[in-house]
Image (cartoon, rainbow, N blue to C red; front, side, top):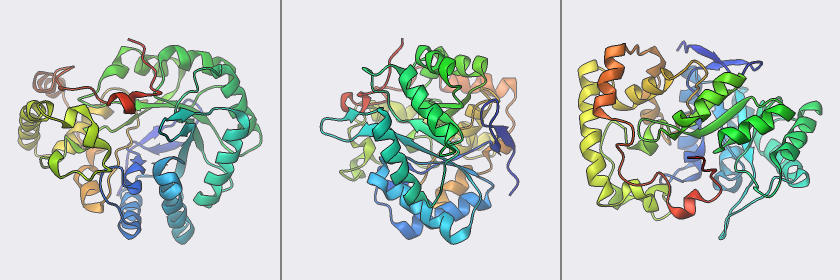
Length: 329
């Protein structure tokens, strides 16, 4: 399948307009198995999705291992991103020190069957360590050829600007979708001004804007959404009313709800490269062609009436999940 291309930052490679997030392979959104995960990666490759995103935290290396296995077995050529910086708890902690970053990168490269990654993110900032020091560390890794570029995740515009002055930032990823729009208050604009790619994760609202209603009561105990306020009552019932209206509008357009949700994200700027994730090739097929969907000004206006900014009931994270996220408004 032909996928339209977008540039990964001002000096980065051209990649598919839609990337792929590999968090689901670790079981964060329900039980996952390796064989199904490998099939999903094959479907992503076939769809022209060539920008893949994982992290050392996902399943404590499980996601990286699956991606590495696929790359080794198939020889697939993809632009690869992984992340570092979170030490799982309880309590959750953060480490952006050079020695830790280097050790974790070495471990990630081993799992990924790579001698470098194209993009390496600081998954969460260690607040007591100046971001300028972190940028210096990432600059050394670039000079040594271990990474091609670096990025930041869940950070504020001020942090992006400080880091970028030391070693240019290639990408920033924050949650962004039709139900999480905080990046519109500065991050998207800052990235555009500085020539940084903005990488929205969870662009299909953690499955809420999928083709069918989710049933939070059936979520596994380990499911990330189990304690997420938007999936808990009474919030979930309120949110469903909006979701049903959105899904009905998608039907009038002849597209699926997740494809329309992704198309909306893509229309927010040419420097946006969303990274939806899924555990199965069937769900991937629901949105793989979203970059081909054109939206008129009337469509965008209509979507704003159906899902106006701030419509979602409940916070996007629980208090525990919010730890480490930079708040700026």
